Length: 611
Image (cartoon, rainbow, N blue to C red; front, side, top):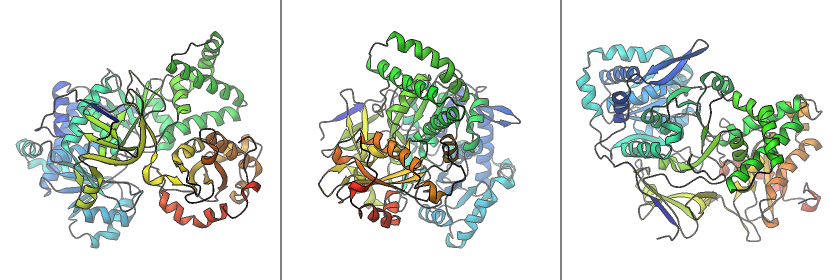
């Protein structure tokens, strides 16, 4: 056993008879008239109480029962992040069925694999576009009996069909499953090959929700707590939070269109956010470029520098000089307060996961009055295994283990997890299941380190460690994350395995680029073939590379980069639905660009003299 291990005992006793539907039943008993959801209504929001939600859930569950869905049946679901997502989720729990979520952006071949592998007998989709995708592969999935389309009113049809089903039958069905039974089958995003189905149990959701609510009580158990969900609910992160919110009594709204997110935050006024680092980067970069366009770029950058330093000193227990206090108060009025208002004015916390945030952004938002609680987990750990606490957060770490969870480091630094959150097995894949466990501990594939209090820091993916020709081990994420924070950088992949030095492939952020170009005296309409070689653009990316290089040794630093005239997207096959890079696919598809990086002598390339 590893010497580096932290086990946090559960704070809520386990209940072997409980299942996920009990979370809603308990909430309705405790606070039937509490607004549990809000849905768009004209220019505002209409509340839906716990009791109303429960009635809608039971009515839809009756429809599933009347349509021949049996307890234990797999039902696939493909839709955007809306109120109906969680309604369908709980209706399937109440009907005794097992949901198999499918990403809304999935291709016909991906849908085919999930339907075939899971053995789904029915599928619910949001729109006719999705129905058409399923129709393409319908003949290849003979087990699929029904496809219901929400946009054409099929949920209403189901509700009316279930009018003869009794409350007693739904109560019988929802009570069948116990803690160890399968609650859902979630397929991994497939960044390292064909997606595997993770069997998550009712215990995973129930015990993790009950214990997480205590650990994060300042976030999810406060009067008036509210959040606006915009991440895909097909992903375990948002799905778990939606269930945790019901347990904690948090009002949940939904905004499936992220281009309307700021307007949604302004009207909904959440108290906490669930986001990935790219969202915080976009908020910061948009504010910076807007300030630049208004001739106030210098003020914004000064305010950001003070914000980061002020927060860092507070975290480290250092004294805040009087001059900094004065500057901070001034910038709070001029800059920070406006950003707070843009986010709705009530956001006090944000939970961030899926990729490293970076301490600069963490400190910046902390000074805005938004404490970003960075956490860590995978589909196999029902989302969070560790998370920073509102009572004690260390920016740059992903926090301590949650109650009911143990985390340890193997001899090679790999993070291993056990506890109430760890999945049961990979669906119909005993070989992969056996390979994923080490004496009952789940092998995450990530490398990390602990501080003396058990706060975990992620240093990279085990499979992604680059070994240069000189034998130097390099974790790409340490270099990639700071570069990706630059406003004009879209994505970056560090390369150099068995090569003489470290290089990088860079793509540009097409959304941010026009504003940046205008702010820097360049035509926003310049062809991309000219943009990627323009000296000002090269210098901007070089400055981002220089910043990243400061955190590593010379042997680990990026010596050369190339900007590609392309975008890596989910549609292009280079990103997963949660916007993680598919490294192996990129290394294969852009092998020629990588080879070219190593053709010319490095001394003639774009290395900063200051590096």
